Length: 419
Image (cartoon, rainbow, N blue to C red):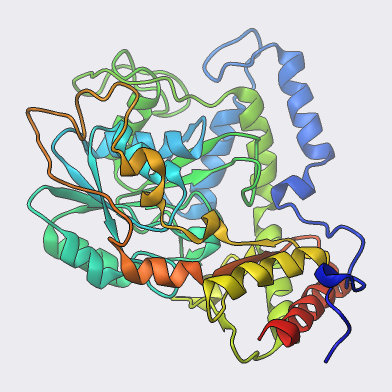
C-alpha cells in the first residue's frame, strides 16, 4: 500500500499548482499588441470606425482556412453560434431537435430559444450521442440532430450523418468544446450542415467570450450572417463589408463579435495547432504513465487520432468511488471533478419544469404546436448510469514531463487506495 492519501492527512503528490489553462495559458504579447491596435484605432465595431482594422474579418478568414471550409460567421459566444445555426436552418416552432442527454445547458437553451422542442437521446461510452438511440428518437416533427463533441472528442459522425441523410434531417454540430479537434481527418464542426465553436475563457482558445459558426453551404452562411446582425437590413459577413440584401429579409438578433474580441481570437487561432499538439502529447504521456488500472475504464473514442486531448475521463465502478476519486485527486494537487456533477442535462430544474422566461408560447406552451413531451429522471437510464461513474482530470498545454508524471502518480496512488 502506498503512503496515506492527502485527503486522509497524508502528503500530497503535488503542492505547486499545475499550469492549467488552455488558450488562456498562452495569452501574451501578441494578443496585447492586437488589442492595443484596436483601441488606438478607435474602431471597436466590426463594420465601421475612423480607422477600421477589420480584425473580425481576419479571424473569419483564418478560421475558414484552418478548418478548410468556405464560410464562417464570427459571433458573440458559442451559444450565439448555435442560435445562428438553428436560425439558418429555419428551426422553430413545432420542430423537434435531438440533443444528447449529457451536455452543457447551452446546447438545450439554444434549441429552446429557437422555439423548438429538445428531445434527449442516450450517449455512448464516448459520451457522444448514441446513433442507435438518435434513430429511435426521430419523429415526423424532428428536423435536426445536434451532436455535442464533448471535451474535444468527436461523436460517431459516420453513423450520425448516415441516419440524418436517411431520415431527412439536418446535423448541426455543437463543437463549442472542440475547436481544433478532428474526426477521421475532418475538423469537428465541418461535417454536418453547420458547426458552432466557442471562445469562452475555458475553451481551447479564448477571447473571453466569442464564437463562430462554420458551414460549406452558402445559403446557410448568408442566413446565419444576416440573423446575427438584426436579420434584414443587409448581409453582414458576406465578403468584407455590409452588402445588399440577397434574399427576403427577416427579423434577427444582435450576435455580433467586437473588434477587440476579434483581435484576440485571431491571435489565439494562430496558436491553436500548437495547443492541440501539446494537449495530445501530454495526454499520451499521462495515459502511458498510468497504464492499465483494474477498476478504471478510459472514455472510449471514435477517432483517437482526432482527440483534442484537453482532458482524460475515466469511469469508476460506482458513483461513490468516482466522487471519492475526484476529491482525493484534488487533495493530491490534481484538478478533478465529475463533469456536470455526473448528471444528465435534463435534470436541470428549468428543463424538468419546462420553464421559460414567460411560460407562454413555444416550445412547451404553444397552443398552435402542442407537445406532450415530458422530462424526468430515468428517461435516459444508460446515460445516467454511465455518467454517474465518470470523473475527469484536466490536461494542460503547458504541462512539463514532470507535471504529466505527477498527474499519473496521483491517479495511481488514489487507485491503490480506492479500487
